[in-house]
Amino acid sequence: MKNALEKFKSLRLVKAMGFNRVVLIGVIILMCLLFQLLSGVLNHGTVFLTYARFSSAMNYGYFIGFLALGVTFVIATGGIDFSIGPVMFCAALISGYCLNNYGFPLWLCLLMCVAIGAVFGTVGGFFVAYFHLPSFITSMALMQIAKGIGSLFTHTQNVSWPNSSDPNGWYRNLSNMDIRLANGGKFTLPMGLILLILVAIVCAIVLNKTRPGRYMICLGANREAVRLSGVDTRRWEMLAYIISGALAGLAAIFFVGCYTTVQPGRGDTFNNEAIAACVMGGTSMAGGLASILGTVIGAFIIAIMQEGILSMGLNISYQYALTGLIVLGAVIADTLSRRRKN
Image (cartoon, rainbow, N blue to C red):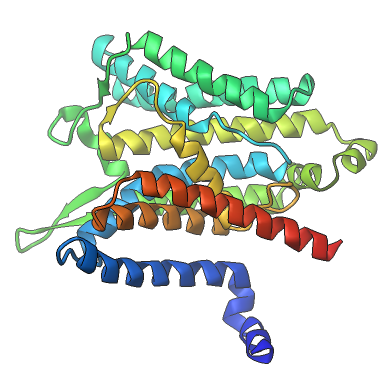
């Protein structure tokens, strides 16, 4: 058994992708087969393996993926950011309210989403990097602030963004673009997946091939050694939070592109799912190790799990419990791995 595993790890494709990522892809396949079986048994013959189910899972995976990409940078430095979900909702609420009530142009509102996220990231990063506040406490405070600001700005009212039939509904093409076929039918192009992959490639280049990215990873591995080498650790640590906030704002665009309506005071449950995607994908909670590709795969595992639970007719609370178990299991595995290396 051990020899067979070593031979599998030595395969060229496995080496190129990474053993952990291959395992994650295998988990996705097993999950799809399991949900196909259980959906039919538990929910009166419901079929899970349909395009509609996968489309719904991808819609959920888009914004979770952007949240997870952003928080990967923070976790790589050895920090944590629990504000990303509420920041995403705050950005969508304020921008959508300005669009509907103040007549702001749509393109400006989309930019506002990213800008609002970046502002929250800058504030959080400043206090963590320059005042040395614990990232856990700082992000929890910002989470509550984001909830409060979003609710106050919109007077605790839901905000609905334009639907597809509205002249301003073109922004929804960023998530799913309908292409008319010659026979009169249509094909939905998952633009959100394409854009998520492009952003993930940029993130991977920044994190692994640039000096700021390497500094961020080194901060998580040995902060004191980086500081003693003459590097301004505060600048690069703060940059990680700015990236996380900006990507949370970008996630807001894809959330409203798929779900249209935003409710005040929500978003904190998405923090756990984004962090779970990171940890599951191979990013160490202790810092110093991060995988962008693993994060993207982890995000779609979370999305498929959510869709699978719904297809079985179960309450969404099961997803919360499973997400918690995934985070706990991944952290335990990471801790044991570090102990063996030490």
